Image (cartoon, rainbow, N blue to C red; front, side, top):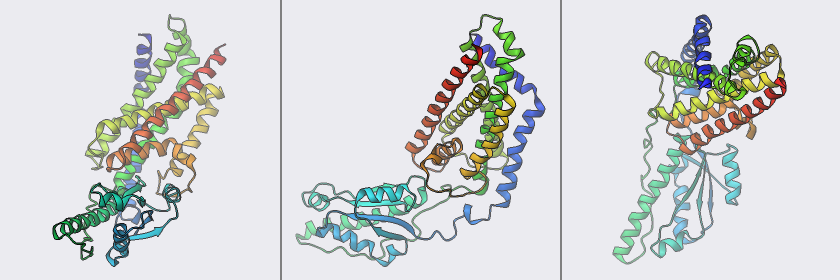
Length: 378
C-alpha cells in the first residue's frame, strides 16, 4: 500500500500550499465571471434568428411513394426551415456532414416504396452531426411531420380501397422546438471551458512534481524505503489526479450555486469526463518532465501549449479553425465535446468516445513517461 501513502502525501503537500491553491481556483472563477458577463449578449450564445438548417438529400428509390417526400421538401413551409441540397451518393453526403458543411444527410434507400407496399416499414434514414442537437431536433421534427401525414394517408387509402394523394397543409409548426436548456448561455459555456483550462494547467503540476517528488529530495527519501519505482510512480500519478479532481469538483459546485451555471442532470458522466482529462493532463505533464529532463523547460513549454490548445478548441471564444481531424484529439476539445454532449442532450456515443479517447491517450503518455523515467534512473 506504499503507493496509497505516496498519493496521500502528494495531495497533502499540494493542499498545504494554500496560496498556490487559492490562486489556481481564483483565476477560472474570475475569468468565468468576466467572459460570461461581457459576452452574454453576443450572437455566439443566444438564439435570435436561427436561420435555415442545411441538409443533404438523396433519394435512391425514385418510385411514386418516395416522390411524396420530394414534394414535401419542396413545400414553402419546409424551404423556410431547411436548405435542402441534393447529393449523388450516400458517401458524398457523409463526407459533407463530417466536414461541417451541413447538419445532416436525409437518405431514402431503393427499397423504401416496395417495403411500404408489402406492409413493411419504410424508413427515412438520417445521418446527423451530433454536435448540434438543436438543429438535429429541427430536422427530426420535419421528418416526423411527414411521417405523421403519410401514415394518415396510407390508412385512409386502405380504408377507401383507393389511392389518396398526400397533401401538405400547415403541417409543420414554426414553434415546434423548445431550445431552453438545450444550448449554453455565456456563463455556462465558460464554466465548462475554464474548468477544462484549469485541469489542463495540471500538466505543469505533473512536470514539476515529477522532478520534486520523484527525482529530487522527497523522491530520494522514498527510494530509501522498500517502495518500488512503479509503486512510486503510481502513487505520484494518483495524487496528482485526485488533486485535480478536487479542484474540478470545487469549481463545478461554485459555478453551479454562485453563478447558476448549468451542469446538466448526469453528474456521473461529467465526473468521468473530468477524471479522463485529469488523468490525461497528469500523463502529459509527467511525460514532458521525463522526456525533457529539465523541469523548467518542460513546465515552461506546457504553459505555452495549454493556452494554444484552449484557443484552437474555442475555450476563449467560439472559433472555427478549419476541418483538420487532428483538432478532435486536442485534450481541451475532447473534454469539451464530452461535456457539451452530456449536459445539452447531444450524442451519448460521442461523449463516451471522447472520454475513452482521453483515457487511452493518458495511458500512452504514462507508458512513454515510465519508459523515459527508467532510462533516466538507469
